[in-house]
Length: 267
Image 1: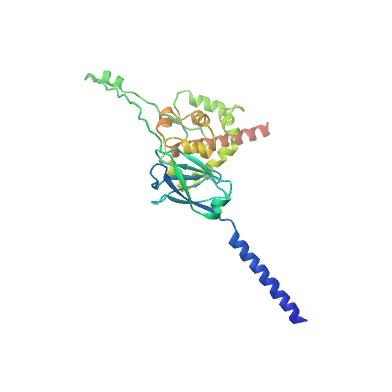
Image 2: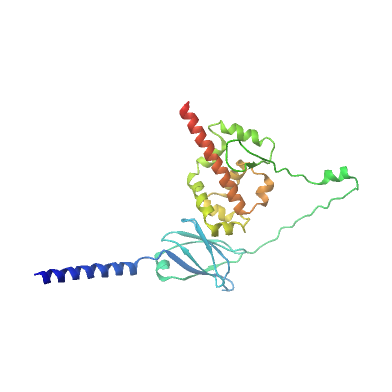
């Protein structure tokens, strides 16, 4: 009788073990692999940018145009490369199951804009010549009690606008950030991913920011403008600098919001 129970026990253990091994073997991979090539030349595109929009992580292709990134079914990957049309691809079960997939990107026709350089005509008189030199003002100010280095003001009346907004329940920061909480929560993930930061530091087109934050170009411009950064900064900053500027503004907005909530409770 004991021998019989022992055989049954061994059979059950081996069955469970075999089932566990089969489950592990058939488990869906958590990464996708692909090769990005030019549609016109079939040559590999090195250092192409890949971002998983859903998980807010990024990577780049190697010398052979190959990349590998963490992903699951229905995640969307954003692929971009200088001089090529950016594309979005969806992760499927087949891609996860069968491995490396070849992806073609189409080259863009680039047109250079004509640039006119205005030469300064110096007179030799310092006072007159100084008046010809364009002057830009990138003043910065801080709000007492708030963290960070403050805002870069483009207009002299900006400080009054922000200080007044602190005591206004319908201030511009609340209107802008309050209606886009999910997008703003992605800021933290974006700042923590070294590859995304590296990619953004090389870009000036705002495309990747729009994709990751899931906002329109109008919304992005409005956020930066309402955070009171100067036009000079906006026009010259790379995408990483814009990201950090928005993040700093958002953190200060949260401080202002918490302060208002405590004030309302006391009242």
